[in-house]
Image (tube, rainbow, N blue to C red; front, side, top):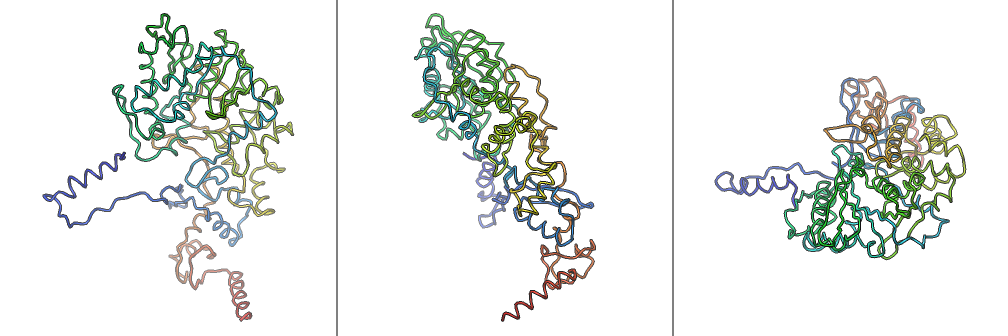
Length: 534
């Protein structure tokens, strides 16, 4: 499949460039501005003394800035209060994507002393993560009609074991979404929106690529609902409850006679939740109020388990979490997991999970969830830290002092250093916002403010991460790094000379006349040593 820009280029080639009436065959083809790997590197534009300076996300930039700072005898404790780059290296990758961690490690720590549940009631209500199910269907049928039948068979398999209620729960995809920031990183080129016109329409061969577009997933959920209302599904829904969510609404499908399917909107389950993770807990609480003593949540997402462990006191039913693969699945008793750890740790799980990395927040590089969880278990102060989402990462009282201490004592650089106070504050705001959304999962329509001002911002009508509020480096350091001296450096037109400062090893100077006396002595001494060796 071609992107719109590729289609325009092909159309131009066929209708204009290869048309003998308009352009000669021997005329040169116009140069296209194709993106290269270097275009993926994030940049940040800042103004220094009236001039615009572009800072690229280059890992060598950190070392170059330090060379300049040391040569100019700048206060290193002040210099290290800046990230020395357009991105906080300890929280983000070079291309601007979130630093990742293994979320499942936290689940492994929680259930390490808990055996898998064996006696799961057959009449339990089932909550199904819809998109996870659709992505794991295996071989995709030829047509959308066959796809609807296969998805229905897999989703309603629990009916055969005695269950009378199954909830098919999907995500929502609002325009300004905190998860869209991460989804946009994974969207591939060449994806087009596919409208399902009829039942015999062919399913796309690249299924996961098709599901990577939000509009396709929304259209698919609407199509499945309309298809499952057909009489062909009435026998399987006889005296059974099948709750199907689509966008913000929820429709109950059932059959009283096994011949026709009735569809009824469920007002109690109309919600503004964006994530299926929180929506699954809302449906579980609804099933508990309807008299179901046990609820099974089927999802591969660790977020759902963490939410269930934290919020299960608000749900009167016993909650079981089904996870794993088709051949190796297991059930986790959520109440048993909660009983195995202290109450304070359970209350801190949402903050711990959001702070140490999830789908919407970045992880700390080289600092996994196991490290934070162990601190949370051993030291009570760390439990209070995660409840309030405040990070204590050093014996010092300031994270900037911690950066200077690690740099001067241990020689740490780049992503080995913690983020600056400014970048950490942005990260904590994002984690606090995400935890606040999670803690309201049992409310159908929680009052949630806009993410703007909580670590995100609107840029070109798109919600993006706001990694920092301050400049990447001090102003003087930015000017010096962008010095373009090449020869002599005796003219006032040269950047370093114009600023009244000596050149450094970071400048591309040849036969430079603008070095300090100490630099000249070091250069001369190095040269004499070499001559002595020969």
